[in-house]
Image (cartoon, rainbow, N blue to C red; front, top):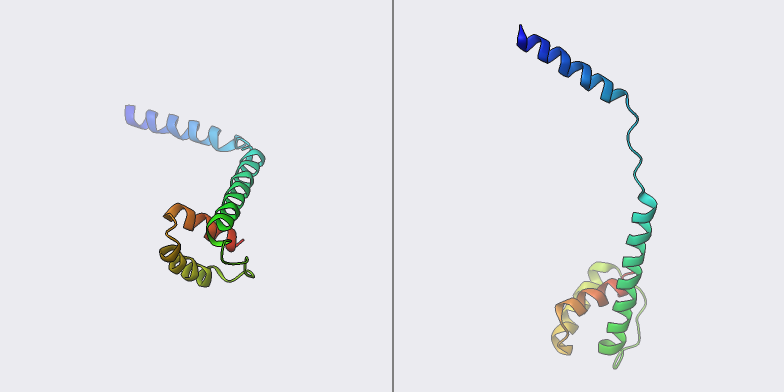
Length: 95
């Protein structure tokens, strides 16, 4: 009998909580922070492009990410840039 009472009590608590309004999340500030991070990555990518690639190349038109990834990987070896620089340049080139 004790288990039945415990089970009924648990159901009552669950039903009361189910009727509560869900807490609102502040997604506005999260979105702003994420946009600021993406913009910072783009700016860093542009700076790395100018420092490493811009010595020999003008910024090309935007290519699909897959094609640009192949080009950047090949140039990474020739220009001896770091993996982090490659990722930032790729991000800049595909935005």
